[in-house]
Amino acid sequence: MSIKSNNQLVGRYLRDTIKELNIKQVTFHALRHSHASYLISRGVAIQYVSERLGHADVSITQQVYSHLLNSLRVKEESKAISLLDDI
Image (cartoon, rainbow, N blue to C red):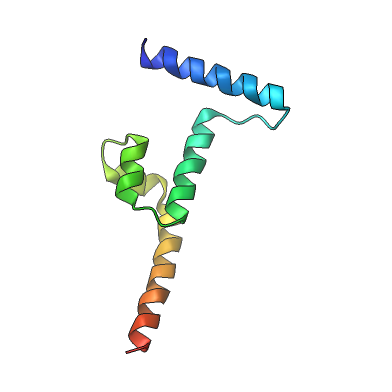
C-alpha cells in the first residue's frame, strides 16, 4: 500500500469519526500540528519532535515552531536568572 493511499484511508477514517461524534471538522494535518505544538510547549526536546514528525532536518521543525520556541526561551531565561540569583 502506498503512502498516499494510506494517508487517504487515515483521512477518511478521521472524517467518518468526526461526523459520527458530531464534533468540529479538523484535518489530520491540524492534529499533527497540534500534537507537535503540545509536545514542544511541554518541554519535549525539539530534536525528538522533529524525528517524530519525520522532518529531514531539525531546522525545518525550528522554523515551523519558532513562535513556540521563542516563548520557551523567555521562560528558560527567567529560570536561568533565578538560579543565578540564588548563588
